[in-house]
Length: 565
Image 1 (cartoon, helix red, strand yellow):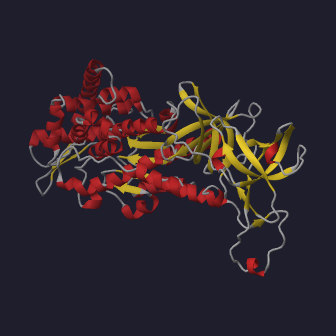
Image 2 (tube, rainbow, N blue to C red):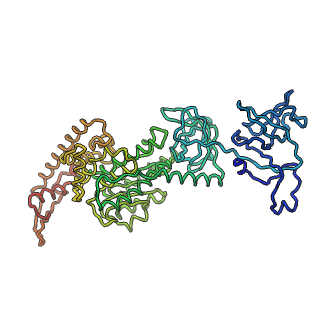
Image 3 (cartoon, rainbow, N blue to C red):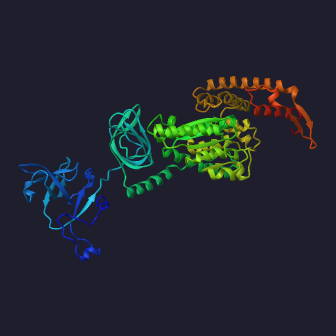
């Protein structure tokens, strides 16, 4: 019996004499085995013709009823009794029959000598994915959240197929199963119910697995997570030899992010607040939120487990990391969540990021960065779990973060590809990429219905929106401007037209303000050098910001002179 082999073999029954010398030296013990079932054992843990320790729970004219566990009872008919018994007496029985209606029949057995093996309950484990209301199930997995509410304690339990919310009831507001902590491998049993349009397991029993069984369960769990975390098998949107080694890095990062979702860990994205940063972050957000919905039975899980925030500076500021860390620690304290995985997009590759990363290292928060600015790998790589940057493969900033993150999003969830075909072109035009693949990206966008002028306007609209959003996500507004996850194409067109016109107006106003204050000289190389004191002459605290202002000034001078500027 496979169930029974997990017990502690070799234990003698109460009537057994001391083992002889041969038994003590380890020779085979051929005495009959009597199994002692744990209280929570069911008929699944028992077998016909096996011997069990039992206790009489009732005496009737035609025999006695005996319990071999809390859930398994049966009749010893008077014709099969070897003696007289009263309630509470112990005896040894043989399980002779399990009838179609579930009734169990035992024989009374008298033994002079035997050995006892204890049997732990081995429930039939159900997968989280595929549960239905009314199912009575046992789930084996890792506790990824333990949250105390004013009523029940809510445990989120993850197996390789998904994550289910489990409600355990004590007195209102009292922590149920206080011995269970986030990270424990458990068996949780109960009935599946529906609560607020989500499946929830109403807990009857929640037990931490013993160390040896927990180790085996975790090994199975981790192996299954690795298998399901494998990214989609898709090719990049355009053929581009320079992109191939970067695509391999993105493939590995997609695996890490999918595994992070499967393990129930929140993800926090920080991205540069400009057009390319938006083109990087929004596709990743769309893909990860879709995958979170696929993994979690709770439809509100994406809102709780994913957060995207822009960063004004081109590096991870201490102000930002302090806010992020405080938010993460509050989430752990108030909601029982794991600390998040931090994903940096369109920044995060330089030595300026190190102090913020070191702050997160105190709490073992994993970090990954996808960036196309010149990196300091010796400074940041010891603090990163993954680092994707074209400079690491001999390329440069012409491969923009938006281009990379569209492919990252497709590796996470390829079903969103149709919404993203124009985004790499918007990213490249926003960051003035001169990559040879830009023509292919613009052609791809044209096939999706976007002219080059449309792409330029979208980039300007994103940049303008990002400026005024400052530190806010602005999810619906930005998604509508980029036309990703937007449910109204007409609104997208009107919004882009409005934002792009406002951006052009404000840029022209800024250039007019500084025009008479630009100093010019011609360098020995023949290039033009222009200087402007923005603090003195530019409009401040408005659009465009200083970096955008100098970029626009540069572009006008290039157009005027046709020379290097």
